[in-house]
Amino acid sequence: MTQGLVLVVCHLAAYWLRLDMSLAAFDRPGLWGHMVCCLLLQLACIELFGLCKSRWRYVSLHDLASILWATTISSAVIFALRMTVPAFLVPRGVILINWALCLLGLSSVRVLSRLYNERVRWGENSGAQKRVLLIGAGDTGATIAKQILGRPDTNMLLVGFLDDNSQLHGLHIHKVPVLGSVSEIAEISKTVAASEALICMPSAGGAQIRAAVQKVVEAGLHARILPGLEQLVAGQVSLELLRDVEITDLLGREPVKIDQSAVSQLIRGQRVMVTGAGGSIGSELCRQIFGLGAAELILVERAEPLLFTIEQELLSAAAASGKATVVRACVGDAGDAARMTDIFERYRPQIVCHAAAHKHVPLMEGNPGEAVKNNVFGTRCLAEVAVANGVRTFVMVSTDKAINPTSVMGATKRIAELFVQALARRCGTTFVTVRFGNVLGSSGSVVPIFREQIRRGGPVTVTHPDMRRYFMLIPEAVQLILQATTFGRGGQIFVLDMGEPVRIVDMARELIRLSGLKPDVDIPVKFIGLRPGEKLFEELKLDGESVEATPHPRIRVVKALETEWQTLLAMLDGLKAAVDSGDPARVRACIQEIVPECNLQAQRNDVTASAPAPQVQVVPSGKHMPSLGTETA
Image (cartoon, rainbow, N blue to C red; front, side):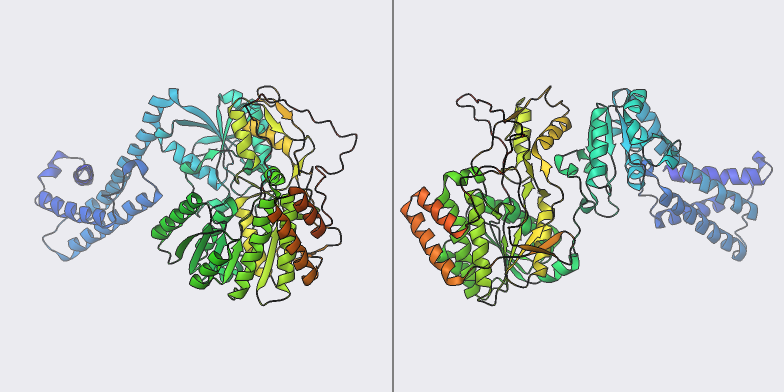
């Protein structure tokens, strides 16, 4: 309706301007018939270019270009009719003026509608809006700014950009000024009365993000962030992707990049089994293997609620994406030979990713027999069944705690490494072992524990002020597991480069700051002493092992020490007898015999006299305070 009215006004105005702005122009013979004809032609072109369906409040340059084409083509058709139809005597000047007026009129009503929504309605509600600074004046920042300006419902008032590129300072993006650098945020935020900062630097590394977050927190602002590049689909930058800053954003290193084509070639069209499919690493392995186009994905898990959850997630993803991957959920224990044989014979997996294990260090100290059953004999059972059924590649997820272990968990994973290495030299299956450290966000890891302690008002408990750990994110750990598998030739152990180790106490204090509180003021940090089996720091290789480069800069291959097959089998028989006896001391003695470099009595690395003495917090009975989780893999 509005567009038709604009066209009528433009047509009458064109006659009026062309014929000396006289009212007599409207008495011209044929004017009304010509106008109806021109109006129908113009409306047809508007419909042809989809301008009747576009929302005016979101008008863009694309819409204005469509208006230009619609008015130009309709005017060209009118001019052609004027030249070929004698009765169609529309003056040429009227056609030209009408084209210009229609172009201006149709564009103006849309632009004014957008200005009304962005300025008038925004101004009416600005009193209740959060005043926001946007960190990053690049393409991503400009896109987010445009969305904020076009959506009053976000309840945000964009007051300026901050960017370390001095050439941008003083410029305006969408009429919003670039006020200065990130280092000046404390002063600038006070000047513009900002209460929140949006960090829009998806390509920045961890160190740059960490510095920006620290400045934001020190300035007393709430920080939100866009995900990294690996989480953004090209061209789809949206306000909905903004979220609170997490500790995982602050690892201080560049994100992992893998050779996607090599990994895809390994997985696509294959039948792949994942054990421990419902766990933190296992479930992410399932997601990525599904995304790489496996023909079949066999999920093996003994915890049925976890298995059901990951099965339903993958089935929903298959329905949404149209992927042809067949998902098979199998309840079972990797150490149950009969059940594993049945699954292998039924589904014939070609690749096995073995992520099932007991991983919690203190719990396994109190239950060494169970650690041996699952981590050692579960791995042995699964590996032997895989060899018997002609599996092409077997990947075992191990841990850096298997290096010079001081815990039952670490020692049992080391025994599993020894077994699959020895077995690899005696069969056609390619066995690959991948070691890495703690995984942020996994069940039992430090971040959820710290968050819960902060929520309760503290204290946040850390075992020792000098404790350090290597950390990875779950998705990048799994990416590197799959990448390492492409390099496997049999019996190799791969070590993932996880950057520099992080002090746990520093992570705890950073998490308190991200919660808008002050460490040691609002939330106390308490040291409670090392727990059984824990080290102050983890090591990268055993004495005598050599580490060599691979085609991937973040993956190293260990030239591991070999164990004689018959000797290993005899020691495993002794270990099984010890487990069957139910005597924890005997189990520990057998573990020590198989892994002579381990020291199950040690609970820390050489703590010198100069190290600060741990402060032990006495927790009232019935109010157990969890401390640092040490789950790996």
